[in-house]
Length: 379
Ligand SMILES: Cc1ncc(COP(=O)(O)O)c(C=O)c1O
Image (tube, rainbow, N blue to C red; front, top):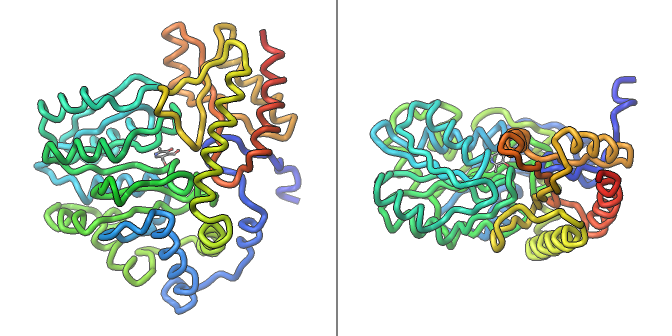
């Protein structure tokens, strides 16, 4: 039968993630009509719980977009950057670059500010660029999944606003694993998705849209249709989606968000992620010649990036991946483009340990123990 040979791997990549058995089970719940009263039974609870996980930010509404994180990022660009605006895309890695690509491919007037891989956004450099370029809108990544860096979203949003610009944030790999700090940072819009720290399959992007964003979008022409936050919000206010949602994911999300809020608790979930970050860091300390890659003080709570010793190569990391597969794990050999660039500079590659969503500390310890043994075989 189709699927009989599908491997049951424990995913330690950085999304998609392992699903709790209850979430898999929820995939069997009945399909429903998205304009029927049955829709409300799922999405009323989903919207309420999204707000709770997001810290109940006043003046924001959660919107569910069909697609994935990229669709919400694109909607933010299409709806919030006008033809006469200048948008500054601040990047600390591949996903910061993605915001730049979304801006330029939508014909926006773009400046790109890039920081070296592993570094967080440097506030002094950002301040200089804000002064020099005077952008109207600034995008940046809260948690850079390609490098394992978390930026100080509150301080950065404050700085951007002090220069008269409007911040827009990509929180894709953070939301659900650590505080998004939307209330304190007050971005114009905060974007995320289902398949990372929320512990769900991919399929929806999620945007926290501020009242201020709605007022701004009124003045932006050619917002598209599915990328128009005004059209999206009109349906979100009814606890609906603009276009037909994936009903299976709707059922799973209803069950999972209820679990996060009412069983694990949001605080408990955030603390578990902090504990897993500590476990990953302590493990790297035990690994001779391996080092934490991300800048100290800016290391992600949902994934850890590890710099390998000189003898390690991209091909060897691929071998590690296959050996780990034999142990029942999916290992993450690092972000391809970044490792290629590091190799071209004569530097050894990095790998990533995803510790997000519903991975438990003991599962992570077991994984790292096996990984340590496997890496020990490469000298
Ligand atoms: C920080 C970040 N932004 C954006 C994306 C793109 O999201 P998606 O793959 O859900 O479209 C990702 C995906 O890994 C991500 O990690």
